[in-house]
Image (cartoon, rainbow, N blue to C red):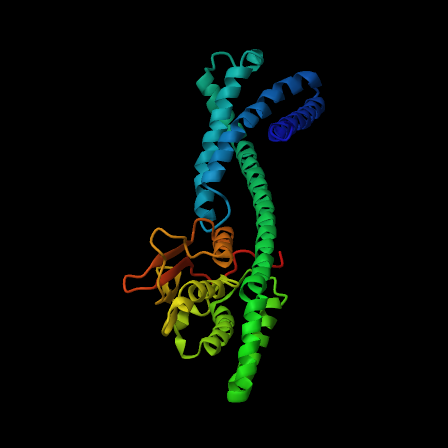
Amino acid sequence: MLRKYRGWVFGLGAAMMMSVFIATQNYLAYMDRGTPRSWWWLLVLEIPVWTAWLAAAPAIFAVSRRFPVSGPHRWRNLAIHLPAGALAVLATLVVLVVVKTPMIRAEIPEGMSRVELIVLEYRRVFAIGMMVYFGIVAVHHAITSQREAERKTLREAQLQTLLERSRRDLLRMQLHPHFLFNTLHAISALMAQDTHAARRMITRLSDLLRLSLENDAAHEVTLEEEVEFLDKYLEIQKIRFGDRLTVRYDVDPSARTLLVPRLLLQPLAENAITHGLSRLEGPGTLSVEAHRENGRLILRVLDDGPGVPAGGPRRQGVGLGNTRERLVQLYGADHRLVLENRPEGGAEVRVEIPASTVERVSGSA
């Protein structure tokens, strides 16, 4: 309950503190002029001033949310805050004149209307009022920055968990004992027929295991690095399937420096081989494509297998489900992942993410 209203409690405390400070300053000023006033009376006169600003704070916060003083449009937004601040000073002053006039009627020159009093006071307190307005804007910016930092820390922890789970899933699902047994059996058979191929398979398996277990906290890597990892995995699969598996790459050179989630392509390729190409009696082709389009990175993993069964279970294992989850964590709604049949036969997984060379979340944050 207290947490829900702690903002108002803090604001009320700040308003009372400012009332005490300003009342004390005015009290000392009257003393220096030889016209002492009651400190309590001066405090009573100050409380409505800071209470009015406290009441205006939610509206100022709303303007600050709409026009934040950070980000790419901060200078434009600061310019917008200038007239907004002037209006806020005027609004609070109108309220104060209405509230305080009965209390200071004796101090108001005879015959002066409330409109004249508002104009006079507006000129007198404009600069101070603008400082108060931008002080409230600064408080909102600090609160927003703190909340964003907390969200970033939470998101970082979630991403780290998902990344570690992806690594474990890679070893458990893609490099499980059955796969390792088949790979080692293929190596054993190749040793008597093609020692060069056997050595290449051992090298690729070693590289794949090393990269899978590498202690890298980065959530995103360049597409070049991701393709390198995928190629080592597919090299093993090509040796296993022989002429039954053809792999084709069509990767735009300008896209190779863009960032993608670590361990993104391998589960998609594994899904295509396990649920598609491995079910063919004859040869099949796996294609990996990547290109930029309107500020987006488009990734496609295509196969010419039997496709997704109509009305049957979707071809989504743990790896593909984990990929969906990581895309949501990294990009929110700013991504797309689609698994569908191709008109010419087979299936396609299409991933669309922002084309960027700047990491969304730092692994070392």
